[in-house]
Amino acid sequence: MGFESAYESKVANDEGRFLYTAEEDAVWRDLIERQDARLRGRAIPEVIDGLARLALPRHRVPQVREVEARLRAEADFGVEAVPAMISEEAFFDLLASRRFPVATFVRKREELDYLKEPDIFHEVYGHCALLTNQRYADAVQQFGLAAQQLGRDYFAPLYRLFWFTVEFGLTRTRDGLRIYGAGITSSAEETVYCLEASDVDRRPFDPVEICATDYRIDVLQPRYYVLDRLEDLFALSASLTESLPRWCDRAAAQTAA
Ligand SMILES: [Fe+2]
Image 1 (cartoon, rainbow, N blue to C red):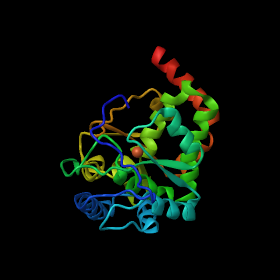
Image 2: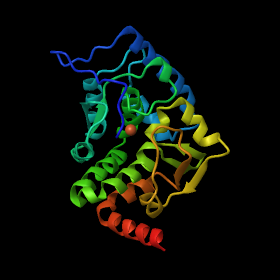
Image 3: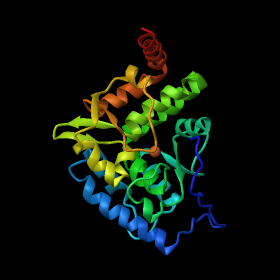
Image 4: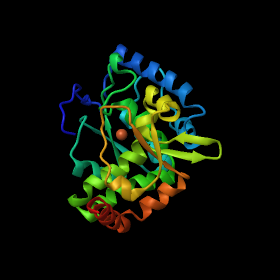
C-alpha cells in the first residue's frame, strides 16, 4: 500500500481465462522447481502437504478457477482475482467471506528472488497451499471477521498481526524451527535467510508487542516472531475480536511508560 505498482494485474478473457505468455509460464516453472526443493526441511509439514493437495501445474501458470476448485474441495475456501493492491476494507471483507485475494500477474525474471508486491506465485504457492488446511483457513477468516466487528481503528494492528503470522511467521516444531508464512514460502531468498542468517532477530511470539511493531514490505525482514506451535495461531485468531482491543491498550500503555 502507498506505492506505485510496476505491474498490472491480468484481466480474464470472455471465457474467464487469464492468458499468460510463454515467458511467464517459464518463470512459473522456474519458481516452483526451485522453491519445492528449498522448502523441504524448512517449511512446516502442513505447507508441504498443502502443496501436494493443491497439485499445481508445473509448466504453466495456474488458472484462478482451478485453484478455487481445489481450495473449495479441501477447506471450503475460495479465491478472488484482484488488482495488485486493494483497499484494507476490501481485503478484510474477502477474508471474512472465506475468499483470498489473488493478484493474477507473474513477477518478472529480474525479480525472481524477491518482490514487494504479491504476484500469483506468492498468492497461490504461498498462501493457498496452507489454506487447504481447514483450521488454518478458519484462522485466516477470523482476521476478516475481527476487522468487520472492530472497525477501521483496528485495521493497523490487525495488519501487523497478519504480517507477523500469515505472511512472515515462523514456528517451532518437533524437528526444529520451521516456516509457515507465505511471504517466506514464496521467496527463495528469504526461505534460507529467515532460518540461517545470524543477524536476524527471532523473537518469542508476543501479540502485544506486535500490535506496536511497524514493518517494511520492501526488504528481507529484520525480525520474525516465533510461535511455540502452529496451534497457537488457531487459538489467537479464535479470540481476536475479544483480545485485540486489550492487546492494543496494553501496547499503548507500554509505549507511554
Ligand atoms: Fe501475502
